[in-house]
Image 1 (spheres, rainbow, N blue to C red):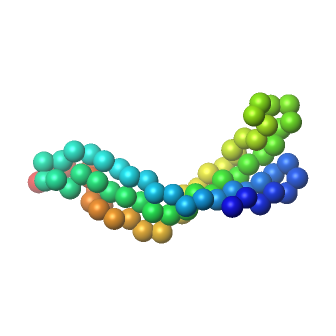
Image 2 (image 1 turned 180 degrees about the vertical axis):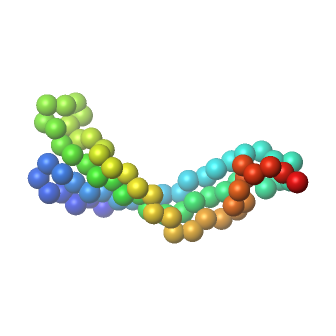
Length: 73
């Protein structure tokens, strides 16, 4: 979804981010599910003219190993 206001815009989309780290215990993955929000600004002299000025990921939930980077027992 995009909301345009002159030389500024806000855009959003759903996203899934997977993290993987091989572990001996087999708990290798974690998935984050949520929504990305972007702030955009237009500069007619630039190529491409639209630039990302802000980005946020709003987490809805995650699944899998909550800390694959933690030391293994």
